[in-house]
Image 1 (cartoon, rainbow, N blue to C red):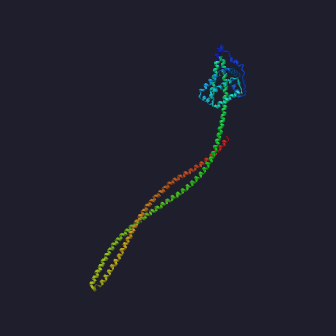
Image 2 (cartoon, rainbow, N blue to C red):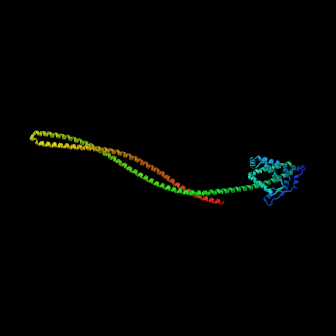
Length: 441
């Protein structure tokens, strides 16, 4: 037994110490300790040195505890209700008056001198209740400390023998410690059982969810894989069509370049025609100048023919005057007159021809002017068409750059889609593995 710090004080006043009535009373008490000697409960009692004589002493002071039971319970719940968490637990699960009555009966029973299977079972029930209502061990232990203080106060105030009071307080401390061991151990077992049940439920629930998710994931992976294959096929088809379009664009670009070259050749020919028409126009204008000179010569010839005619008339007159001697001269005058008439007729025909040539030349000049106008219009249209072809070729080159960029992007897209397909296959495999693993949990 531990040495009491008040032993010296007790010896000093030993001559006036009252009689140890409670210890003597304990010797005559009948108690029942029915615990398997090989059980943990028995070993726990040995560990805290809770012996039969202690149980007898507890039973001996039962009347004292019963006498002050209301005081003890009131003091106990006064401190409990000061804690808001505990107050709320009480409101949610019972009433203070009901709990006071339960504690009253429980304390009286603790001092009954019976420690058997029924005593142990009641502590197990207390632990189950504590676990069910969510009372944590820290609050239980704190409340038990207050209960111990209340019991010690009753003992201290009602037992004058200090040695006896100290002995009884130690026994009460053993009893409360034993009570706490039983309840906390049962609480822990109950809590472990509850955690196992919760874990099992969570595991089953999680297993079900994982199984459902993996099955859904596997199904989704198969659908995704199928869609990816279709998408790859479509992408390849699009890529093939795109490549065919590129070939057509290249062909069109080649034709446009060829058309541009042909148009350039046509433009050059139009320029040559334009130059040729200018030369022709100059030649025709030269013809007009020549015609003017011929006209002037014709006018001179006409004047000469007129003068010749006058000379032939004068010669005929002089021949008539000369008579027989002028007959030969008359013949010459007639021939000259005839020549003059022929010349006049020839000049008249030449004049008509020149006039007609002038008209033709005028028509040619007008036609050349019209040709020049058409050539200039054709040249302008050729230039405009060339500009259009230049713009078309420039657009095609820009489009080709964009097409090449899109082609690279399509190839990248096809590659990404194929990677997605590969990843989807891996996901499907992982889903099957997860599903198999989950079933084996």
